[in-house]
Image (cartoon, rainbow, N blue to C red; front, side, top):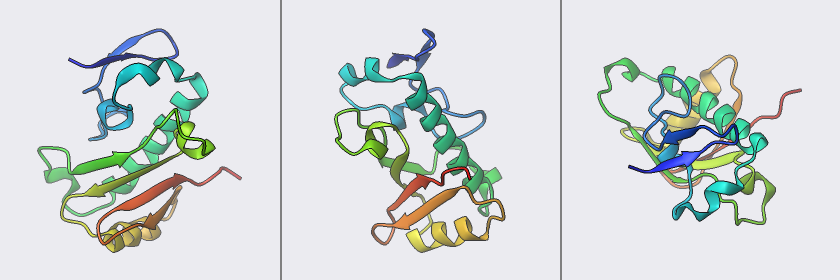
Length: 136
């Protein structure tokens, strides 16, 4: 089983959810191979869990959320400690798809959520980029 050490020193399984009760797992976030894992700082950890929470809340607002029995997510890119872009190497942005939803659907539900705290940008017909909207 894949594990990683969080900045607080605790070791976690990659199949553990990033935020409570979500379908987003640490295996979705962490780069492969695992040689970049020790580069995770507390700030990066907090960015990842904040973005994960915001995506989770968006997902909870979508129809059929409660009927799921397995993860509908396909994360293609999240934290990349080797990227020169500060948003990517700090865990503030990710790209993903959700089964049975188009990019436009995800954008729609994102905008329909009253307290939207994640910026969704369609990349293809299914792939979106999610970014933390800075707190004001």
